Image (cartoon, rainbow, N blue to C red):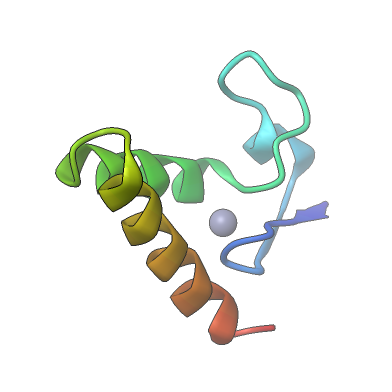
Length: 64
Ligand SMILES: [Zn+2]
């Protein structure tokens, strides 16, 4: 088991394997949400980064 750095939940290690990497620091669900927020905010650039940062901070505030 491994703890996700965004939602704080623990999942089997297989949940952290995606994008060609074996050891991502957040789970597949958070990765999907991260990508969704980015694409809704232009994909890349300052606006997408800021939106993702806000979401991460909100998620982490609920368990950190
Ligand atoms: Zn997660």
